[in-house]
Length: 218
Image (tube, rainbow, N blue to C red; front, side, top):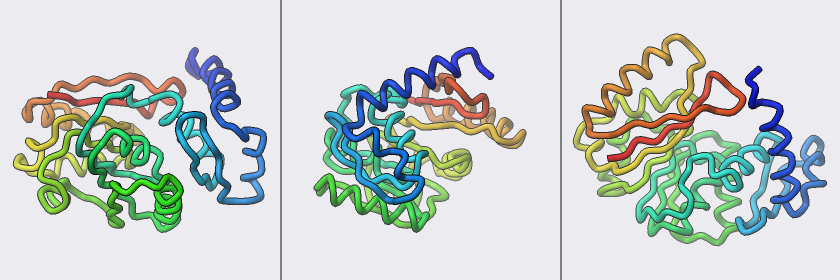
């Protein structure tokens, strides 16, 4: 266990109590779902389980991708899940492309987009294997690419052609090290990003050694 684990969980519980209007209803997700929750200054979202609550806390309250209040006109969200990041970024963007292929996640994603009344989010309901299927079909260029796809980020970025990569300005997301293969893929990805002109920064997940956050900018 990391030294930061217990302090992180304690501070997270405080964030949830302070940030969720009806935090006391969260245990009901064990029996009833989905349920809507309103987050202070961040709108309302349907959640299906306790992990959804944790994700909402990390993305909306913790700013885990370290975006603060920056504006990115065109955003691609690969791993849209329940729409937390897509909806958050849509308030600062002209256009958001949210990609998700899991049927249960897709349903909640669409519920939450409707709940937020965002009109600038387009949902792509399919598994993404490279950026070539999104650029230039859906966008000509991308100011911010967010990736949280449980290890598929390596395949997607390595499979993308140079012509697509050069149209991405900033990438943020999670990197996963669940297997030795993923650790080897990370080494290759660092070389690829450097060759494409990106500067890569990573920072630790406060609990898990097999996950870290990253940003790649040029």
